[in-house]
Length: 427
Ligand code: ADP
Picture (tube, rainbow, N blue to C red):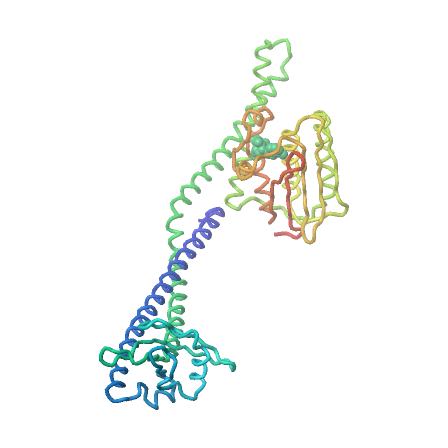
């Protein structure tokens, strides 16, 4: 069975493969199209110049006109013959049609150097477009140049053929692209499957191990409690200290196993969601009043900016845990005499929960990592506060469980803002 992070990874990999395949297909189509077009053009240019020489020779021999009447009428091939310095027109075969007129009005664009050619794109006033390949070559009689002959070959046929080919190529590319997407999807699954299986086994192990540790831990906690209740005089100072240490460490261990179990379940998407109408205003006030004892002890001021009548569909226990995690972090990572603000407000169809502190802040680099399991920016400081590096992973799991999002921002001038956005309706 796929678990959620891998399904996301698979989708991301498929998109990546599809983008790479798509780009490759487009590059191949563009390269093939350009190459074919370039080859045709080079061939036609060479042919047209050769034809001008041939027509020039025939003109010199028998004054035979370069273009037939039919070619001029259909606009397939037109010609313009001038003397060597271009001052006198010897023969005008541009015809009376629109194409000839357009060519005449674009005389400046004709090729200027002998034995060269140029592609002319023209648009008439009524919107018709004309594409002609124009070439110019000398007409030589013996060793004397008697003129220069311009010939114009209609290229519209090639353009029409090229558009049709391009359309066909793009259709084929689209079919290929869909096939490539399907292949990418299949490839992504093949690549991810072994990692996903290993991950699932590891998750199962974490869930089972944490579950199995619950009972011995409960027994240990009871035993330690029993020892603590033993009359003071019967235990040495060292034993008392050891028992207290055992008690705090077994508390820590049992929190760790509970959190690990919750996270393993959230990965498998089997975190139970007891959805009901939750009075967020009341919940925020309740959690804030519970936390205010701790904030007061740390000489921190807890400010509440909680809107009235905030309600949403959700799991009250989980949402309360979310608030506690965020407020607890704000408290742990803020120096004395600073202020923490809990804000709750409705923004359109969402609720915004914001915990703002004036503490040590989080660097941009660490902002990406703090939601990772067991990640702690300052391990020593976090551990001294009893931090396990799982709080924000849990917060993220709870927010996702409710279909919301969580962001970490900088507070100005210092500190951190944890910004949670939750939909008011159930997921
Ligand atoms: P922890 O149990 O260590 O607090 P969390 O997952 O809750 O674990 O937080 C991960 C790390 O993110 C913390 O160790 C701390 O370095 C950093 N962090 C979280 N909240 C804040 C905050 N409000 N200000 C500064 N750093 C924070």
